[in-house]
Image 1 (cartoon, rainbow, N blue to C red):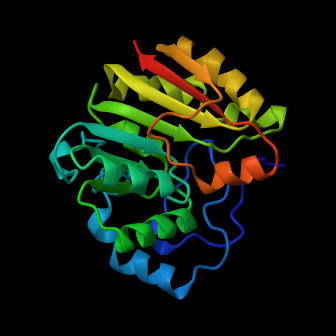
Image 2: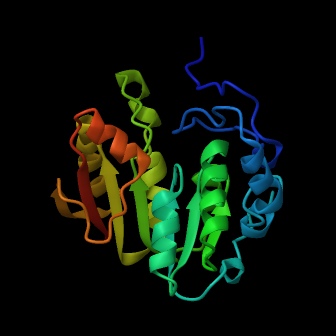
Length: 242
C-alpha cells in the first residue's frame, strides 16, 4: 500500500495541483472552511498569488519575473507558513522587504488571508502549493533569507525521506539563495533537528548557531505554542548559505 498522505477532504479548487513528486507535507485540506475563509480564498487570493509558478501555467518552466513580487527590496521566503502568523508579522515589521510565502494546506492559506485582511501589507506574494514548483522557476541567487518553521516532522523512520531537510529539497533551496544568505529552521522535534544538522552542511549551508533561545525578531506560531503546552523544547538553528 502506498504511504502517500491522503487529504481528508478534496482540496479547494483554487489550490488544486497535479501531484508528481513525493510530498514533504501531509494533508492539503483540514476542517471544513468557515464561510469567511471561503470568502478570503475567493476574493483575496488571486491578487496575492504568484503567476506562472505551477506546471499547468508554465509548462516550459520559464523563470519567474521577480518584478511581479509586490513591494521593493530583497526577497525573503517562508517555506510552509502554516497559519501565517509568522509571515504576516514579519511582513508588517519589514516593509522594505518582499516576502514570498508557500503553503499547500488550504486552511493555512485561508488563515493567512484573514490575517492580511485585518492587517494589510503591500509586500507579500503567495504560492498556495508546493515550494518545489517555485524552486523550478526562481532565478539563481535571488533569495536573501529563508524560514522553515515547525515543518511536518514525519516521525516514522520510513517517512524521514519525506522531510524537507533532505538533499532533494535543500539543494534547490541552496541554488536560489544568495551566497551568504541566512536560512532559519525552528523545530520541536529533536530527531528533525538532528537530521537538519546533518543534511544542511552537505547541501552547502554552514551552521551559524544552534540554540533553544529564539531569534530577537521571532514571532511565535500556533505550532510552537502547542509544542510548549505539551512540554517539548523548541530548537532554533541558523545557517549561512556558502
